[in-house]
Length: 95
Length: 485
Picture 1 (spheres, rainbow over the protein chains, first blue to last red):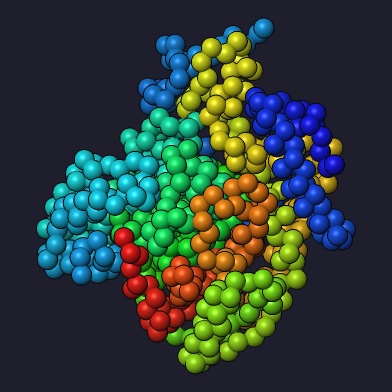
Picture 2 (cartoon, each protein chain N blue to C red; picture 1 turned 45 degrees about the vertical axis):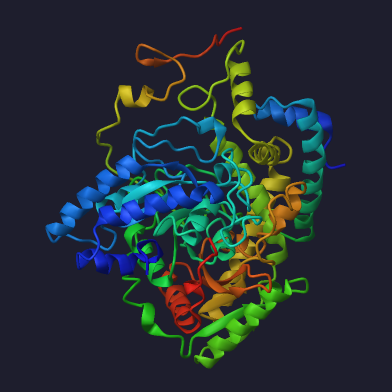
């Protein structure tokens, strides 16, 4: 076994995903199979190889720090599930 | 020839000569959508009122003598492109009612030319899939055989070309999501080099791999549409500041003396016999046109799928953290406290493929596994990139199949995600290497299903793969065959 059901439950908590019992069962089996498959990477010696995070060589893209137009409060809040005045409203944060 | 069958460049000539108006062309396309999209399900949202307003504006521009290559052309957009005032779902319940407050850069560029947006196209949820079956809005059917998938994730974008419900479309490609559906629907699909097209306003899946590109009826249209959307954008700091060549002007370059590489790892046992035959015919044709064939080796090919499913899922788990029910999108009702609201919102809003990839990516990035999985995959990615650089020291272009088989049946691979992932084996390496690839129609299986051919170019070598594709298209004319719909 590459991954246990309780590890899958732990990952779901990290990912902020509420999974049902049957989803936990299914994902445990499927993730186990996929993780067994990706094990094949260990057959390669990658000692000293530099990891690639981007396909094209990147340098920092600098620009002058000048204020520009933004979309504005009303447009930014237009899709809010719940709002109060000019804020996003959420359930109680401190339990 | 009916209006709905025309390419961009053919319709452009008719608009310019005032034989057809944009309103007429747009109406014809909307009527066609009305008539056949119930069977195909390529569209999530059709925008007839806005389209007709845009078409009238295009006709005014044309009357004033101001016509650009895309002015008045009815186009469809994968529903991953945010569009101001038009619902943008990304194929997900979590964005079912999301109406973006701005246009992304590629969309803005199309609008500047006066293109007419007829609607938003179906896709795998958050572009995660190879068959369009993970869409919250139901699977797309392949117009060549309604029992088959159109491929994915830009399945709607490809099916709309084959069903003749858009003159051209835009898609995105993270591991093959433009090229594989283009192959399965017998249209042209181009994944540009990473950084060639701005990703601003494209809903992110795996940011180091995602790229925007055209799906079209022929190679000339792909060249035209790429030219329209390519270029540096200050709003995407990963877009690259190099000149955009005139891709159309270079199309007729020909292939005489061109060195075409055949990667031996792509011509393996188990390749479907119909696909093998189509590749052999293509190789013979290129030889007869004066191209030189050489076997090359991409030794790390067999590690590409494993590498991709670690890197893409890790990036996805991070990108999709923003869907939390706070600022936009679905929010679960009746949650007690903030944490429960996050977990329930995401549980209700995401489908199973998206959950599975978030889970895998979260695991690969979690404490204790980060080096063993994520960093290991990034190192293997370096080796895969090096394979391509080495091959391109010997040859100008690589020729490969797009998919190991013709289109598969809806439902066929749903039970086993790993089998689904392995169907992208020939397209994924191009995204990992960050270079460009094009899929062009290359024939049909015995059962009449489309088969695509892939040409892979050097980084920013789009002009070369386009002219190589154009030479093939001119001789074969596979692209003229119409789906029986």
